[in-house]
Image 1 (spheres, rainbow, N blue to C red):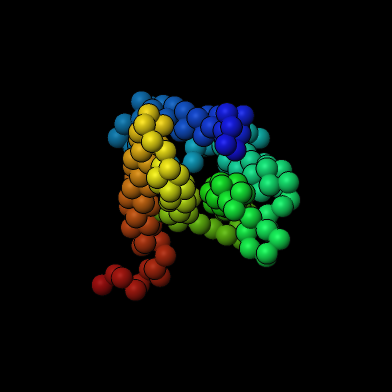
Image 2: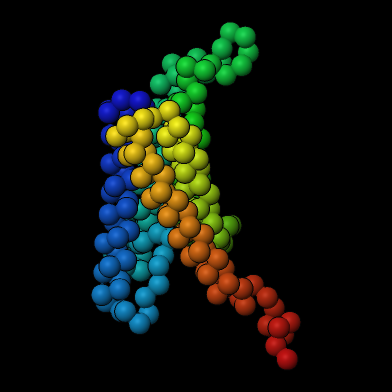
Length: 194
């Protein structure tokens, strides 16, 4: 992933999903400012049950899985382990990227499983916290990558670390707010009423 071509697929997917989230949030706010709230993912075509409703989650899970396979299987040429038995240090960067992508794949897969089946009913707050762990993995990856970059590239990585940190903070705050709002639904009715 160290080349421009290696960053093209994940960067394009991050840009597309981010632009979609901004567009959907602005459109929902313009439509109903009083009832607006942020969502951890945005259904395509509103809340209807169309075939493309979960497109964002499919793009996140599928794109992360595809890029994770490229990072772990193709980039390493299946030489993950060194002859001495440890991890091959020349492919450590690929494995770090694969770990970050694994977290985004898990978010997409868990959100799809939660939305499309009844086996894992996660609240909006729980999904926010799962997404926050994925952003935290990305934050750690960028933070440790930034230590080796100097000059303009170092400042660019530092700016990315700040932006990802804001993503983590806002996602955690939204998750805690959503969990707090959903808390009464998880408690039996007569336990908290007088």
